Amino acid sequence: MKERDILAIPGPTMFHPMVLRSLGVENMGHMSREFVEVFSKALKDLRKLVYADDSVQPVVLSGSGTLAMEASVSNMISKGDNILVVVNGYFGWSMRDILSRYPVNIDLIEIKSPGEVVDNKRILEKLDEKEYSMVTVTHVDTSTGVRHPIKELAEEVRDRNCILVVDGVCSVAGEEIRMSEWGIDVLFTGSQKALGVPAGLGILWLSEKALRRLKETESSLSPYYMDLSRWIRVMKSYEEMKPIYYATPSVNLIWGLWKSLKIIFDEGLENRFRRHKILSRALRKGLKAIGLDIMAKEEYAASTITSVYLPEGVSPYDFKREMLNRNVVIAGGIYPGLREKYFRIGHMGIMDFNDGVSILAAIERSLYSLGYGLEPGAGLKAYQDTLMSDGV
Ligand SMILES: *Cc1c(COP(=O)(O)O)cnc(C)c1O
Image 1 (tube, rainbow, N blue to C red):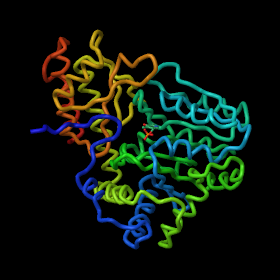
Image 2: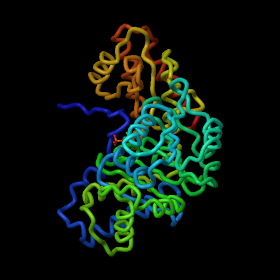
Image 3: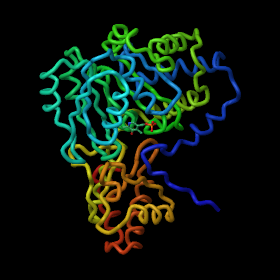
Image 4: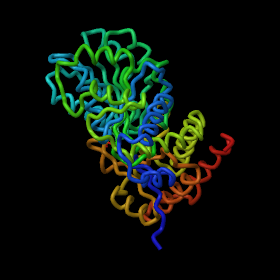
């Protein structure tokens, strides 16, 4: 028998069986009434997911999170613009790489060491120095497992003539994001992370301020497939149940997205964010109890992903193999210069407290098999204690 693996990587995550089943929906046209209804509902639900008001425009593209990343900036820039890229880890540098393909001036503001986030004060000082048309920030950086205090930043940027672009690929649907209340202008994610839908959808949300900027810069640099103005017309047409064509939407994946959103709202957003928070905290306590160090400072630790330093002398390849032998798939490190030193656990989407027990138990046994001295059950005990103190 093929044993069941626990997929504890930061996407693709584990998918709810109902979502997987929904992908096998009967053949249907992208203009069919059934599909149009589902897409229309999914667009409305996407606003609810990030507490966005009606003025916010969601856009669903076919492609991965990186497409959403590029679409989020490429439509709203003019030649010679100054753009500030906040780097909390790997995906900040990815944003720099994307923007470097465009005729803009990029300034970076980077963390001093992995596990920190760039201080909002430093960002605001930088914004005072020069006229920036845009600032980009990663909400949860998937390489280090930190969460940026976005609310505090957004509240300061909202009254400036500067668009705040937030990479929510590793946070949307796992961390609370109140887009309209906080004042985020552009937010984006990919389907395969906390949203719990197979890879293939890049999803963006644009605020009123972002939509205004989009109009101003419309003819400046004009990507074709990524043309958000065109896509917005398509999204509006589907939401109003009078579909128009631009390029074929991913019918089955959008069906899966709608199903996953239903499952998310059945649980309740607040319950979902609380589950992620408690699970991640209990895992960190368990990992620390067996002597492992967490990369993220506790005050910035994300609820969707944890980066963990390996004990001296344990190679990530051996450790990943031992974990896989115990049916748990974890991810290696991607932070430059530290790839051999740490591993990552993704714990978002439908992952639950029972999965946490299995992951932690497999970590204890894997480390033990590699000669690392530990008290069996020490991590599990701390995990249990934390859950119990949270009434789980
Ligand atoms: C995964 C991820 C991306 C890239 O998404 P893909 O779907 O792999 O293209 C971008 N930003 C963050 C924060 C991510 O976690």
